[in-house]
Length: 346
Image 1 (tube, helix red, strand yellow):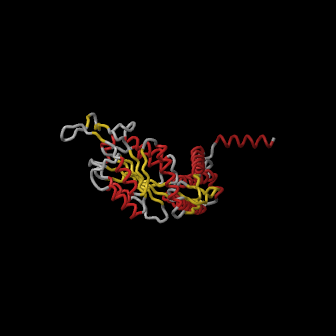
Image 2 (spheres, helix red, strand yellow; image 1 turned 135 degrees about the horizontal axis):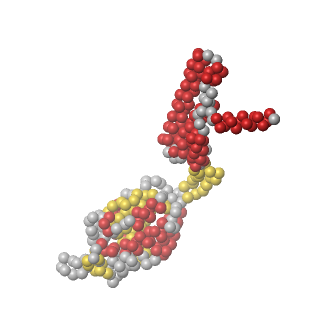
Image 3 (cartoon, one colour; image 1 turned 135 degrees about the vertical axis):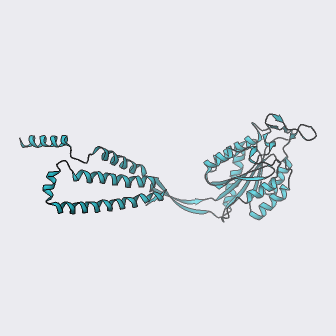
C-alpha cells in the first residue's frame, strides 16, 4: 500500500511514457530507413565507431532517471508494518489570553503576560491528545490560531503573543469568551474547554453572564487562570509609567473575585497562576474527567514511511552512468577487449 504526498509530480510519469513511445517510434523508423539503403552488415562497416547498444543504454538510463525523479518529487510513501488501533479521547481547548497593557506588570515573574506564555507552553508539552486554539484579547478580541492538533506550531503562536496583537486597549472578557466559542468545531462527542488567562481587570462587559451563557449554549467549561497580585503593580509601557488622566500613576490589581465568579459561572476551575505545573496538573485532570463523559472515538491509523530516497539514489546512479558512458565505441576499450581475446587464444 502506497501514497504520494505531492501527486501532481506524477505527471512526470506521463512524460516518461510519451518519451518512450517517441523513442520506440524513432527506432522503428530508423531501422526501416537503414534497410532501404542496403544490408545492415555493410552499413555497420561504414560506421565502425557507431554503437547502437550504447545509444539505447544511455536512453534507458535517462528514462529510468526521469521516472525515479518523478517519484522523488511526488514523495512516494509506503505503508508501515504497524497499525495502531484504539480509543482516543476527543478534547478541544481554546486558550484566551489577556494581552492588555496591564499584563506587562511584573508582580508575576517576569511579567503577567510572560507567565501566561510559560503556562501555555507547559500545557503544550503535556497535552499531545488535545486540539488547541488561541484567542488574544484586550478591548477587542482576535483569533490568533484556529483549533489545531499541530502543537509544535501552536508554540510559535503562543511565544509570539504581545500587547500589540490587539490595537484597542481595555479588558473585554465577555467578548473574548464569545470569540473563543466560535473557534470550536461542530463535531459531536467532543469535550470542550475555554482556558482564560487574565488579571481579570474587566472594564468592558458582563464577563460572568457571558461565561454562564457560553457554558449553557455550547456545553463549554470556562477555566480561569488568575495572573497578578491583589497589591498590584505599576504598568510600564515602553520606558514610561502609565499615568491616568488625573495625573496619577496607574496601579493594576488582580481581581480575584471576578476571576472566581467567571470560573463558577462557566462551571470550570479557578487556579491562581503561581505555578505552571500546578495549572497543567489541574486542567489535565479536569479534561480527562470531562472527556470520559463524552463519546469516545475509535480510530485505526496506518503509518506511512518515506521511501523516495531510494529512488533518489537510483536517479543519481543512472545520471552518473549516462554521463560516463559515451555514445560511440571506445578505441581503448576495443584495444583491451582485443588484448584479452588474444591472451585467451594463447
